[in-house]
Length: 285
Length: 270
Image (cartoon, rainbow over all chains, first blue to last red; front, side, top):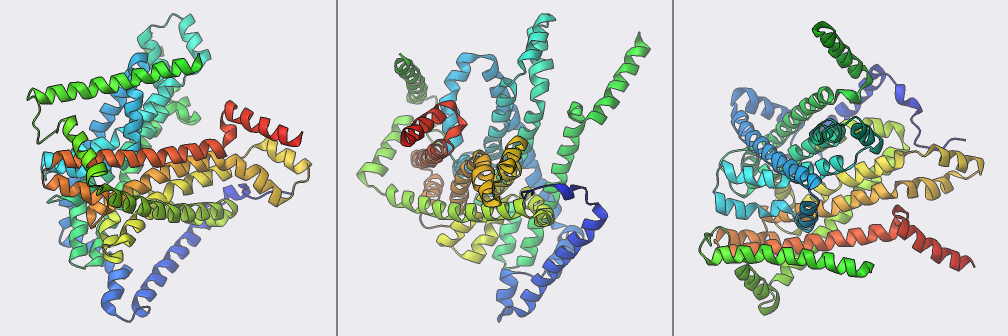
């Protein structure tokens, strides 16, 4: 007798699942289209609640290739979010590293960190907008504020959890403090740290968008809000989808970087890298 | 002895807090800070006192925000957990919703706010909807990971003891997944609060979010900082509730809780 939640069928090939995926997707889209066409009494209401997928696609083509409005706004939002994420990551990791190195510092920032964690940090939005104006920097500041927490927590956790046996080995080999930190603590924490970066990027987008909703002249938040106010919901959906698409691309790039940066997570890749290093050493000696 | 140590460490925290606030106040008094940027703590305190005890106007906004958050959170965990249970027990369902979950994960839920306002209007519904939308994902992912986590030895034990599927679920799978489930709930409750407040920024007539925005845009910085403190208070409240529930229900997480409950149970049996 077997209980459920087994993963026996894990090795189903892509060629068998892909058609089903596509069929489900097509079915959903078709259903949506039909609901829009026949499910409502009022045309305006239908386009307001569920704009037709074909219209959304047309709107996407329009904003990407014909009118080309979306690029400018996408660039603006990405600039704010990525700047904010970078600043937040530097601050968060800096704090985490200082907290791991100094026990007193760790003790005294702890209550502040708990307070920061519980406060909905995005709520500072209106204050930042009032202080820093409607432009780029209020959004960057908000993005940085919401982004710093993920890298902080992950870096801290990663650096504090070390393998004691490895530490003993480092000590017995007479490694310096710097070496122990860099080659042991940091290296073993890197996986968690990179997860923190991903968290930071995702939350920075939230921060940038909220700042744009509150007050801005450009950016995806503004664009979506504009389309909604003009009741062109197909365009609003298209703008939303473009955030998704580019967010996905960014996410994939980060995953790829991760994979190569933390090469020791994957046996095959590790073999390759060690081979390369061995060759290098062989040539030089 | 232990309680004394606790008291001392608490006193240290309080002291560091007081010193930080005191420095801020002193710096502001001597004109180092532009009052328009960062109001001095005493002014924020006075405003808080005014809002909570003199006029009492904050309570209504407090209640509205908390109620919207609670409803959104409830919907969110129902949807998230239902989807997770379905996905955990049905292999093909899990496979075919995976791409949609990825799409959902990379779209910032907050970006949907204008659409939600267009659909649900300016009232409570739009805040509840946004709170639900942003908070359902962590419970979904966490519950799913928790239910899929397998303890081979435990599975074998249940099999040899001839446990029914029903027993296996209630006595092994669910308790095994509970730590993850609660971690998801804790994440969800703070994101639900966040979603509610952001939706209030978008458009609202009541709630702490709109209160703060009004203060900020009329450049009453003491007022907006006071509402920020109120939000922090709300966050601490919901976080503490989640934390206490977590400790009570997932008592086997730490040794002390385990000892407490097993003592109680052994007494009952005896």
